[in-house]
Length: 236
Image 1: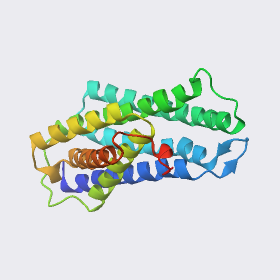
Image 2: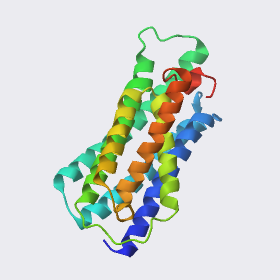
Image 3: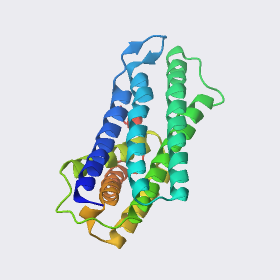
Image 4: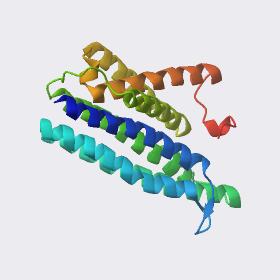
């Protein structure tokens, strides 16, 4: 891995974190009505935003795979991509239906909309994010470490954004039982492996993101004595 190769990879990781945060926040807060009735701009943001996110994941994966091919990790990353796309689609559709049921007071006696929206959809997305972290980091570890003076400033910025949104979607999507242990495990594993950190941009990105999410989970959990959704505390 050459110095010239590390910088574009770090930049793509940074954009992955920043774009992930912008899309999830935008989909939650931008509720401009669109046609057909009940569909909002936030739904469109999440639906279309899945494409550039998957393109970034694929670009990073293909770059790493070209340096040290691994069929098993390639398959894991492929499954992660499919799961991410399906989970996002399920969440968008179920979220619209859930909003409609709330506004029309029709109710959801079987809890079916809530199940597809808040449980399966969110868990599929967060599980795929965890699979991406494991797969990309493992793929990177198979390549020789590069000599690098320092990671671009965008990489830690993107990692901060990614860590924040992983925490935020974990709380609002009620996937804390999955997201928090994954963050703890990844942080411990990354710290145990040690440096050189600047030569491993993928590991650095996910390690920083994991630490950020752990700190935020801790603050939120202590503050509220649990992990209630933001919408139940008036923040969303």
